[in-house]
Image (tube, rainbow, N blue to C red; front, side, top):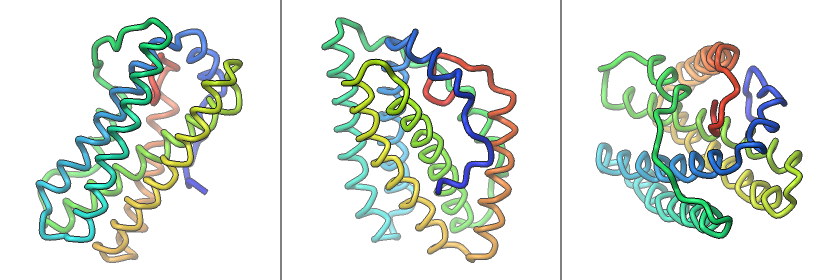
Amino acid sequence: MLGLKLPSDPRWVNIAEKNIEEILSDHAFCEQKAASTAISLIVSFPEYTELVQEMISLVEEEMSHFKMVHDLILERGYNLGRDRKDAYISKLLKFFPKGGSRTMQLVHRLLLAALIEARSCERFRLLSEHLNDKKLAKFYKKLMISEANHYTLFLGFARKYGEIKEVNQKWNDLLEFEKEIIINLTNSQTIHG
């Protein structure tokens, strides 16, 4: 369903489970960054009324997810910790060239957001199916469904605002590019690593 060209290494779940404090902290910051992305789309493309309306709702949802993860962190006696650079995102950002028309810039940002949500959804599915902590597994199953909805939302808008054939080709090329990133990433204590 997600179209990802390479599934995550199943060993990532073992790393995540052994480092759950780090995973939760990274996850909290991922939710915050997702809200920031939605705000940035509103600020950058205010003339796209339907997009703005959806992004307003998305900001609220992502911040509620941030709160849910932060509450879990506190409940377990952890601290949020500091945000770290995300190697996965840094590499993904190199795919699309800078510049181009406003519409093309929007499409590129929407495709990147769709892919990040798709990979998050896939990782949350792994956590929901393989974590020994059943409460946490249930939590990630619920969030997995949200991430799938966000993925389809962003991809749908990219296809709506861009020329469909070109968008589909860029999407496929981006998926191939992301596959190489996943192959070369080490399994780390991050949601995307």
